[in-house]
Length: 168
Image (cartoon, rainbow, N blue to C red; front, top):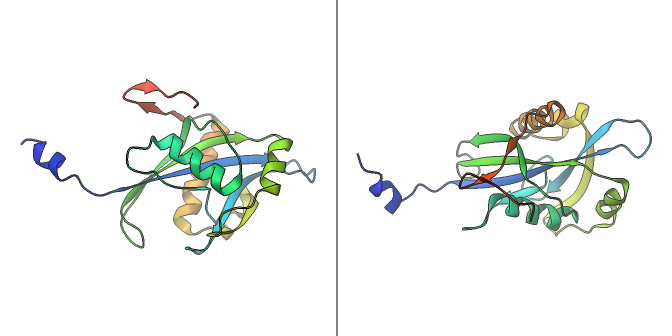
């Protein structure tokens, strides 16, 4: 069977990009917290991110959404989790979670001063112990798995046509 027919009418699929950005709690507890957004269009919190545009490299889409929503510009070059999401409220899709790493105190200040777009109600820092209580189940499991990958150094390099991507 030829793939020509498939390529003439490719299936529609959403390609989502999210970033797991972490900080050490500035109050001195030493706990690690993840940056999350509270979008108007869904219940619960989610990681910063959104869909890639046609022809946009995935990591550039992740970086664009991260900057728009949080003010941070980070090199997102490694993937912590790949999540297939069947069609339901949104079209079928693949979500990639990139490592934004552990940010420095001056980067935390950028987030604190940033005004997110109107569809984002607020930015939140959430400790791992609270992830399941502030996110829907699918989002929560994705974040827990991505956090595990970050902690254990089991991330995946991002390749474009088999070549490691540059930071910018």
